Image (tube, rainbow, N blue to C red; front, side):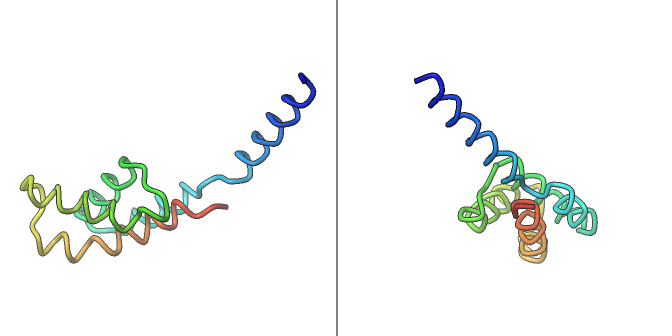
Length: 94
């Protein structure tokens, strides 16, 4: 029983080690964004999206920033897609 559990644990650790997000590339991409784009990027990353939930997460975060008076609607529309692309780069596995 112990040997089986050890093998399962080692397999899971191996999978976790190989399935890492490319945080450095995502952050490098975000460094080229406008100030508003960086805000959307940071808020989206903090919300911990997956590739499957990225679109809805960006939309939700940008909408919340507009409703909270942090950014204008025009700025949100202009910067949400570039910010989302940088988050996508960050989420892609190395």
